Image 1 (cartoon, rainbow, N blue to C red):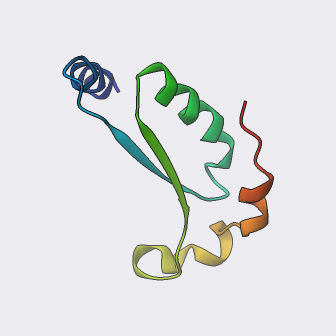
Image 2: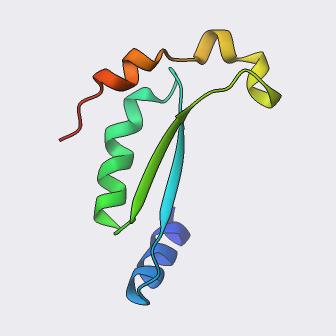
Length: 78
């Protein structure tokens, strides 16, 4: 985490836009707000979320971890 914070600070100092991508599943839904605040604090230009797709490494966990689109629509960010 220390390296990430330092790298983001250096990129921001040089005016280079940064972005982060977060896969959201049942197991990390509670961390969404923390990630948003982290991105705001460290000047991340863009943050994108995506749900699991039933293929590749997610095939084994898809049925237990996938979220419906309604959950995303109902998320409230301050």
